[in-house]
Amino acid sequence: MRYLISGGGTGGHIFPAVSIANALKELDPEAKILFVGALGRMEMERVPQAGYEIIGLPVRGFNRSQPWKNVSVLMDLAKSIKQVRKIIREFKPNVGVGVGGYASGAAMWAAAKMGIPILLQEQNGFAGVTNKILKDKATKICVAYEGMERFFPADKIILTGNPVRQNLTEGKKKKDSGEKTLLIIGGSLGARTINEAIKAALPQLSKADIHVVWQTGKIYYEKCKAAWVAAGSSKNIECLDFLSDMPDRYAQADLVISRAGASSISELCLLGKPAILVPSPNVAEDHQTHNALALVNKNAAVLVRDAEAAEKLIPTALELIKDEKRLKTLHTNVLKLAQKDSAKRIAEEVIALAKANL
Image (cartoon, rainbow, N blue to C red):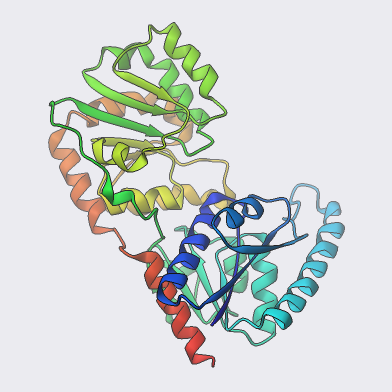
């Protein structure tokens, strides 16, 4: 079987794409997999690192603030669709898999026009533009949240969840010293608002009877470290740019402060972690707020809006981490939302589609 996988632009698209490819290989070791990405974007580096071949398209996003600049964008889109048609003629895929992003739009559009069945994977609680455009051309749409009928035809939707890191559930728990651990994560690049709130509250946190693991992200690390030193280098606060031992850190956390990206939320659900979610306001169609509300509305997480983080984030965290009953409620409810073996379940749908198309 031959599978064409397309999407990228951000880690939130690339990680699920690679996870689906890995699951396809596990279920079908003879499978031939080819990725299509956007030139100059993150996938052109990350996909080969994962061991897969990728072809880049000159596709770009539309300039919404300066529409007159979109003539060249449309020309690049036309070039990309022409290039994908050539790729499909040569590679002859049985199925196309689109995970969102500019390249996915061009690749899946061309595949559907050429009679190739396509499966879409939507990571967020608010559907992305590319997947909404492609919805009528898709045969199946795998989603991570309930209620996606407002974006996609109900008969095409399959609730599978988002793929998460394979070893995430293998973390070692801490020896019970009675001390609570607060884990603060802002993604590999970090989250400015969260970091600013922590910096302002360092004197308060250093006096709190808790252990704090503060992952700042690489961009903000030097300034955050300087603030930590200026506040007295408190021993109960670890200030780190990156966490290489994420499974252990998750296992040891009693409460997590995080952005509300699709992958992060899927991880929190799978591990049953009580969390305070601070959705990033800098994402398309405010989809992180929609992701967060899917949990908050089921009493499975706490929401602090980005604009209120400076004032509310740390007081909320310090109150919540001591509230055993509330932590237990959040743990129980978030665990109910977990979707297990997502990558494998998506891969099984892809293979079924391929077999039906022989």
